[in-house]
Length: 161
Image (tube, rainbow, N blue to C red; front, side):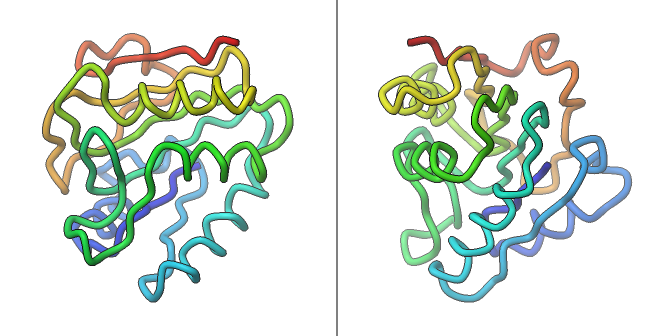
Protein backbone atom coordinates (compact mmCIF):
# COMPACT_ATOMS: atom_id res chain seq x y z
CA UNK A 1 0.00 0.00 0.00
CA UNK A 2 1.22 3.48 -0.86
CA UNK A 3 -0.25 6.47 0.97
CA UNK A 4 0.50 9.95 -0.36
CA UNK A 5 0.73 12.19 2.72
CA UNK A 6 1.02 15.56 0.99
CA UNK A 7 -1.07 17.92 -1.08
CA UNK A 8 1.88 18.50 -3.45
CA UNK A 9 0.56 17.90 -6.98
CA UNK A 10 3.88 16.63 -8.36
CA UNK A 11 4.12 13.88 -5.73
CA UNK A 12 0.41 13.05 -6.14
CA UNK A 13 0.74 12.87 -9.94
CA UNK A 14 3.88 10.73 -9.70
CA UNK A 15 2.10 8.20 -7.47
CA UNK A 16 -0.54 7.82 -10.20
CA UNK A 17 1.97 7.59 -13.07
CA UNK A 18 2.39 4.00 -14.35
CA UNK A 19 6.13 4.50 -14.96
CA UNK A 20 6.72 5.43 -11.28
CA UNK A 21 6.32 1.78 -10.17
CA UNK A 22 3.85 2.87 -7.48
CA UNK A 23 1.75 -0.13 -8.55
CA UNK A 24 4.38 -2.43 -7.01
CA UNK A 25 3.06 -1.25 -3.63
CA UNK A 26 -0.53 -2.29 -4.37
CA UNK A 27 -3.28 0.17 -3.50
CA UNK A 28 -2.37 3.84 -3.93
CA UNK A 29 -4.24 6.20 -1.60
CA UNK A 30 -4.09 9.96 -2.04
CA UNK A 31 -5.13 11.62 1.18
CA UNK A 32 -7.83 14.23 0.43
CA UNK A 33 -6.26 17.64 -0.16
CA UNK A 34 -8.53 19.47 2.30
CA UNK A 35 -7.99 19.81 6.02
CA UNK A 36 -5.59 17.79 8.15
CA UNK A 37 -8.47 16.22 10.16
CA UNK A 38 -9.94 14.92 6.88
CA UNK A 39 -6.50 13.64 5.88
CA UNK A 40 -6.14 11.88 9.26
CA UNK A 41 -9.54 10.19 8.82
CA UNK A 42 -8.54 8.96 5.34
CA UNK A 43 -5.16 7.82 6.70
CA UNK A 44 -6.93 5.75 9.37
CA UNK A 45 -9.33 4.23 6.84
CA UNK A 46 -6.43 3.25 4.58
CA UNK A 47 -4.52 1.65 7.46
CA UNK A 48 -7.60 -0.36 8.40
CA UNK A 49 -7.38 -2.12 4.99
CA UNK A 50 -3.66 -2.92 5.34
CA UNK A 51 -3.03 -6.66 5.24
CA UNK A 52 -0.82 -8.26 7.91
CA UNK A 53 2.03 -8.97 5.46
CA UNK A 54 1.63 -5.92 3.21
CA UNK A 55 4.44 -3.41 2.68
CA UNK A 56 3.59 0.25 3.30
CA UNK A 57 5.09 3.33 1.66
CA UNK A 58 4.40 6.83 2.95
CA UNK A 59 5.22 9.36 0.23
CA UNK A 60 5.51 13.05 1.11
CA UNK A 61 7.86 15.94 1.59
CA UNK A 62 9.96 15.48 4.66
CA UNK A 63 13.00 16.01 6.77
CA UNK A 64 14.53 14.11 9.65
CA UNK A 65 11.70 15.08 12.02
CA UNK A 66 8.47 15.29 10.01
CA UNK A 67 6.71 14.19 6.83
CA UNK A 68 3.83 15.90 5.04
CA UNK A 69 3.66 19.16 3.11
CA UNK A 70 6.67 21.27 2.26
CA UNK A 71 5.74 24.29 4.37
CA UNK A 72 5.04 24.58 8.07
CA UNK A 73 1.53 25.83 7.23
CA UNK A 74 0.59 22.52 5.62
CA UNK A 75 0.05 19.05 6.89
CA UNK A 76 2.73 17.42 9.00
CA UNK A 77 3.16 14.26 11.03
CA UNK A 78 6.09 13.52 13.32
CA UNK A 79 7.33 9.99 13.99
CA UNK A 80 5.28 9.67 17.20
CA UNK A 81 2.07 10.58 15.35
CA UNK A 82 2.76 8.04 12.60
CA UNK A 83 3.71 5.38 15.17
CA UNK A 84 0.46 6.04 17.05
CA UNK A 85 -1.61 5.75 13.85
CA UNK A 86 0.12 2.48 12.95
CA UNK A 87 -0.11 1.01 16.46
CA UNK A 88 -3.82 1.78 16.67
CA UNK A 89 -5.01 1.03 13.13
CA UNK A 90 -2.60 -1.35 11.36
CA UNK A 91 -3.31 -5.06 11.86
CA UNK A 92 -1.87 -6.77 14.94
CA UNK A 93 1.33 -8.57 14.06
CA UNK A 94 1.84 -6.45 10.94
CA UNK A 95 5.18 -7.38 9.38
CA UNK A 96 5.67 -4.52 6.89
CA UNK A 97 8.17 -3.31 5.78
CA UNK A 98 7.58 0.43 5.71
CA UNK A 99 9.31 2.93 3.43
CA UNK A 100 9.36 6.65 4.15
CA UNK A 101 9.61 8.05 0.61
CA UNK A 102 10.66 11.56 1.63
CA UNK A 103 13.76 13.69 2.01
CA UNK A 104 16.05 13.36 4.99
CA UNK A 105 19.61 14.41 5.79
CA UNK A 106 20.96 12.28 8.62
CA UNK A 107 21.33 8.71 9.78
CA UNK A 108 18.94 9.70 12.57
CA UNK A 109 16.31 10.33 9.89
CA UNK A 110 12.51 10.06 10.03
CA UNK A 111 12.49 6.29 9.42
CA UNK A 112 14.96 5.70 12.28
CA UNK A 113 12.87 7.92 14.58
CA UNK A 114 9.77 5.95 13.52
CA UNK A 115 11.46 2.65 14.42
CA UNK A 116 12.34 4.05 17.86
CA UNK A 117 8.77 5.33 18.35
CA UNK A 118 7.40 1.89 17.44
CA UNK A 119 9.91 0.30 19.86
CA UNK A 120 8.64 2.60 22.61
CA UNK A 121 5.03 1.77 21.74
CA UNK A 122 5.89 -1.97 21.79
CA UNK A 123 4.37 -2.27 18.32
CA UNK A 124 5.45 -4.51 15.42
CA UNK A 125 8.54 -6.22 16.79
CA UNK A 126 10.87 -7.13 13.91
CA UNK A 127 9.38 -4.66 11.40
CA UNK A 128 11.87 -2.88 9.16
CA UNK A 129 11.57 0.88 8.60
CA UNK A 130 13.42 2.19 5.54
CA UNK A 131 14.19 5.75 4.56
CA UNK A 132 16.59 8.00 2.71
CA UNK A 133 19.45 10.17 4.03
CA UNK A 134 19.26 12.54 1.06
CA UNK A 135 16.93 14.66 -0.99
CA UNK A 136 14.28 12.70 -2.89
CA UNK A 137 12.98 14.53 -5.96
CA UNK A 138 9.20 15.05 -5.94
CA UNK A 139 8.87 13.14 -9.20
CA UNK A 140 11.04 10.25 -7.99
CA UNK A 141 9.66 6.77 -8.66
CA UNK A 142 9.22 4.06 -6.09
CA UNK A 143 11.55 1.11 -5.39
CA UNK A 144 10.36 -2.48 -5.41
CA UNK A 145 9.09 -3.24 -1.88
CA UNK A 146 10.53 -6.76 -2.10
CA UNK A 147 14.05 -5.36 -2.64
CA UNK A 148 14.33 -2.52 -0.13
CA UNK A 149 17.20 -4.25 1.68
CA UNK A 150 19.14 -4.37 -1.62
CA UNK A 151 18.93 -0.60 -2.30
CA UNK A 152 22.20 1.11 -1.31
CA UNK A 153 20.48 4.52 -1.02
CA UNK A 154 18.07 3.27 1.67
CA UNK A 155 18.79 2.96 5.36
CA UNK A 156 16.94 0.26 7.26
CA UNK A 157 16.19 0.32 10.98
CA UNK A 158 14.60 -2.68 12.66
CA UNK A 159 11.97 -2.38 15.37
CA UNK A 160 13.24 -4.55 18.19
CA UNK A 161 11.96 -4.56 21.75
